[in-house]
Image (cartoon, rainbow, N blue to C red; front, side, top):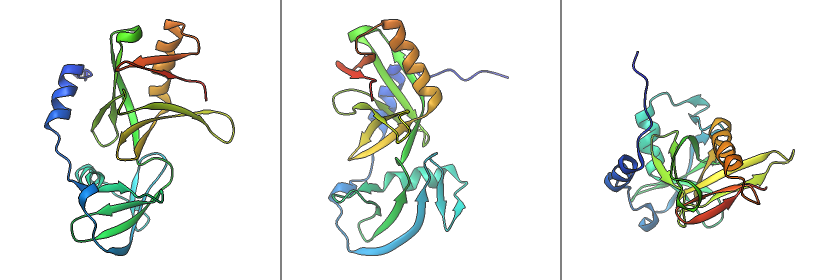
Amino acid sequence: MPTETAPTLAEIATLLGERKLPPVDQWNPAHCGDSDMRIAADGTWFHGGTPIGRVELVRLFSTILRREADGGYVLVTPGEKLDIVVDDAPFVAVAVTSEGEGQGRTLAFRLNTGDHVVAGPGNLLRVEAADDGTPRPYVHVRGGLDALVNRATFYDLADWALAEDATPPGLWSGGVFFPFAA
């Protein structure tokens, strides 16, 4: 069985350049109610309490997701706006590609929706402390939407940060240093 190789940063840049998202920030329809949808903390999308099994449908819904000024989340089209519950972050970063090292490093994250985001000035990586004190890393995706960095991916980041021995521990990406202290 062939093994899947991670895309290079050049391939990810091409994918990002080809990706056209709807202009949800420009749509201001009337609020129509509740979508009866929820995004669980592990990134699973639900409708009516049942997981949405079709990846293509989740990808489609993810493109019309917007964060409101009050912190709530909605699914929005030119004609309607529906509330959606988000337990933690709407996306999960499930893998990371790293090229370079030190200040020349670039980190590109693959999300559970198949999208990619490159950490840098426009997409900050941050680590918060959970109620129990454990680190909760997030990377900004777009328009107030974040991705929770899953544990395996955060371990990759931590390994690279320990190897670089920065004080405080952290990594550079896109010319920005991201400390990992919560």
